[in-house]
Image 1: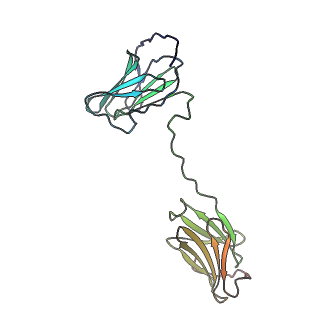
Image 2: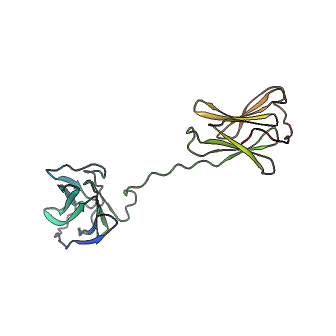
Image 3: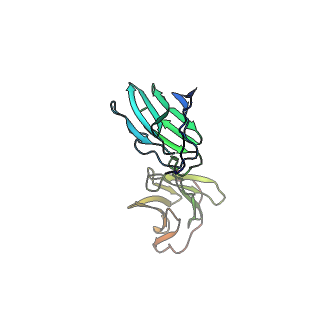
Length: 241
C-alpha cells in the first residue's frame, strides 16, 4: 500500500470501433503496482443480479454486471471513486487502456487485465508441439531410411521414407501401412508398448533381421546368421509405395 496520498481523477470515456464490440479507453492512477485479475476468469460467465468484483492489475477494481441479453458492463473504481465503464454488447469485446494498464471485458462478462511490460503475467498461447528432425539410418542393404514423426510420438504419426544411397526415394511406410517389400528385403514399423521400432529383414539371407529404435535410429537388436554383415542393394521393383 502506498503512503503518499493521491486524489483519484475521473476522465471521459472514449470509444473506438474494433472488429467486434467496442474499445474503451480507461483512465486509472499512474504508477501502481502489478497484480493479476483473478476474481472472474475470461471463460467464467457472469450471472444476472449482484455484481462480481475483479481486482485489476494496478490495484483498482472492476464491478461486473449483466445488464441484458449479451450485454455486460464493468464499472471501474479506484477506492470509492468511479473512474469509467466498459460495455460489452452483442457478443463484442470491450478494451480499456490508460497509463500502461490494459483491461479486457469479454462477451460473457469475464475480465482480464495487465500492465504493459508485464510480459510474464500476460496470458500466452500454449507452444505448439514441434516434430523432431528425421533420423537417418544406413541399412544393411545399402539403402537409407529416414525416420520421422509427423505428430507427437505415440500419436500414430511415425513414418519411414526409404531411398537409395543417391537420394532416389523408393517409397514410405507408416503405422497404417507398416510393411513393404523390395527385392526380398522387408521394412516394417512395429509398435512395442509406447515405443515404435523400425525392422529390416533380409528375406534372401535366411530371414536375418535388424531392429532400430525409431526415435534415435540406434540399432538395438539383431537376429539370424547374416545379421552381422550387410548386403548390397538390389535393383528392380518391389512393394514399396
